[in-house]
Length: 101
Image (cartoon, rainbow, N blue to C red; front, side, top):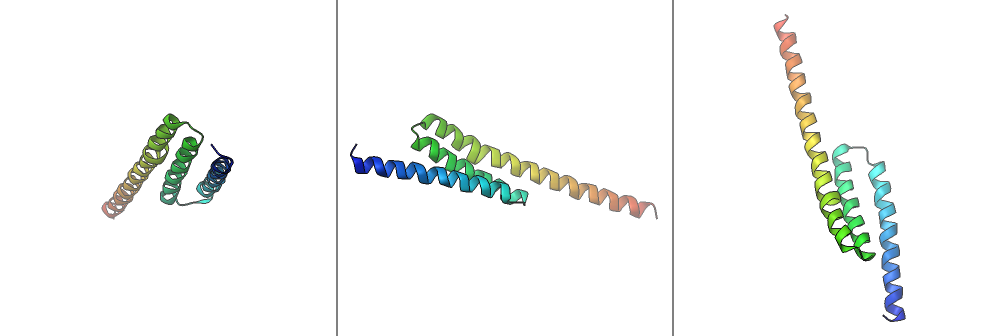
């Protein structure tokens, strides 16, 4: 590896670590749960890239599957279920109020 190649590789690693810091801050600052699930997915993707750049391809693949796909999917499914329960609860309350009149 030449000196120029090594410098490029160090620059890529540094940029990736800065990107991890930026995306993690973005995940924390997002308040909407749906948007936060998307931000978590992007954060997982950036972490997978960092692991790959630091020569851990097995950890990178695991992070890609879990952090960029499985976790955001579970969060989105939980949000859908919560919203369905809220709609059903609101409907039951309206029916209860209508029946008591």
